[in-house]
Length: 82
Image (cartoon, one colour):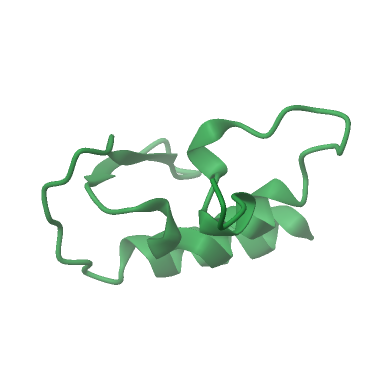
């Protein structure tokens, strides 16, 4: 069920035609392999918050006892005082 939700949100993310801009952050890279073995790779040079909904669904499958990969962190993961 989670995989289907993630797959839907990935499709929405890569079809949004986000206007990229250059910043001092690393790119967010999507490497997708479809069932017919076709591969797709796209890098977005935008803040992680552009994919907040997608990342929150992916984070929900990471066990609470595990470290959340930095690439999935958004502004919600930081205190305002930091």
